[in-house]
Image 1 (cartoon, rainbow, N blue to C red):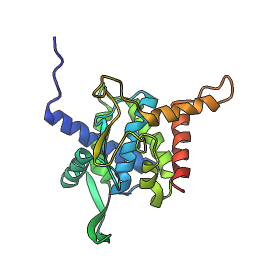
Image 2 (tube, rainbow, N blue to C red):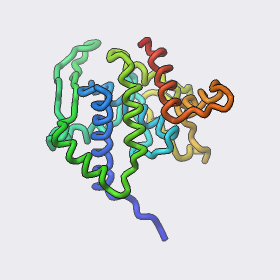
Image 3 (cartoon, one colour):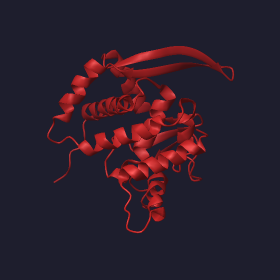
Image 4 (spheres, helix red, strand yellow):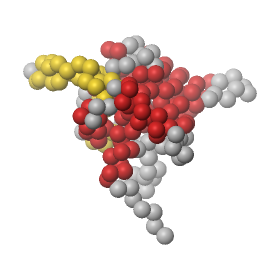
Length: 223
C-alpha cells in the first residue's frame, strides 16, 4: 500500500495556514506588523528550531540569498492572503538601495477575519497544539531582538552561516543528501547543546533551549 502524496491544493492550504500562524504568533508577542525581511527571518527560525520541539513544518528548505532568508512559496501565499482579506498591508514604500529600487513592505493580520480561520482550525481533532505553543514561544524570543537587527539575527544562525552552504542555493533541513547521509540541522544541534551547561539534574525544556539560542542570536546580531 502506498501513501498518497498531498495534492497541490492541500499544500497550498498548509502554506496559507503556516503564514497565518506565523503572523498570529508574532501578534501574540506584540509584533502586530512585521517587515517582509523580518517575516522571512521568523519563518526561518521556525523551520530550523522545529526539531527541538519535535514538531513538523510544511516547508523544509529555504533559499539562501545574500540579503537573508527568503521563502518564495510563503511569500506567494502571503500575497494571496492579502487579496483574500486575511492579511493587511501595513506599509508599502519604495526604497533605493545600491542603485536599485526595492519595495519596503510590512504586513499584519486582519485579526477579525484571520481569527475565525485560526479558531476553526484549532478545533480540528488532528490539530497539533505543540506547534502553536512552539511558534508563540519563539515569537516572544524573536520580539526581544531589536527591529533593526531581526533579519541580521537570521544570518548569524548556525544553519545559515554553515560553511557547506552558499548563496542562491536551497538549504534543506531534513531528509538525506546526495550521498544518502542524513542532513544536519546545525541550529537545532546548537540549541540542544545548551543542555551541556545546565547544572546536574536540570533538564532544559524545549522552551528554555529556544530562548537561550535566540538570546545568542540577538547578541550576535548586535541587539
